[in-house]
Image (cartoon, rainbow, N blue to C red; front, side, top):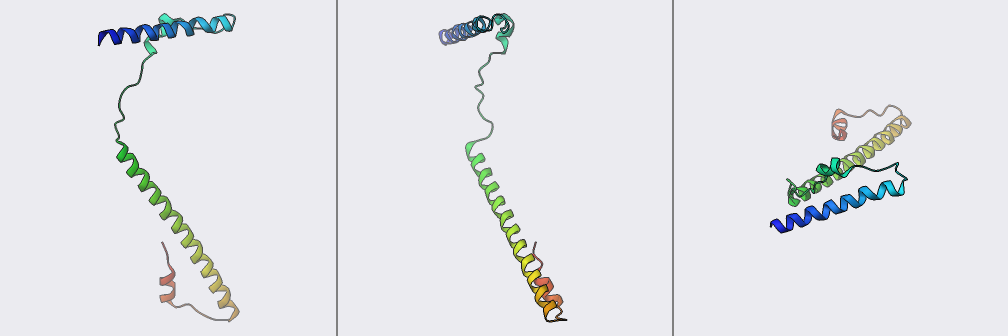
Length: 110
């Protein structure tokens, strides 16, 4: 209603006036601003979010799943690298042990 709008205008004008009068007093005139030049900046953001909460929740779940898959992949790659290294060391110890092409294809991961 119009009365409510006028009440908010008066309230915020008085709030701005008190703040504008406060700073020059406490800073001995070093800080301050003119309320007449800055009142147009004072706005209240009331626009609703363009993205629903359900969309945000779904995106967060997708991001968590992707994070878990990436961590799983890193762990699996590290495990395969250790396995290859151990197998290589065992192969050099037995002198001449050669891996088959099938073995190499089986251990190729991601």
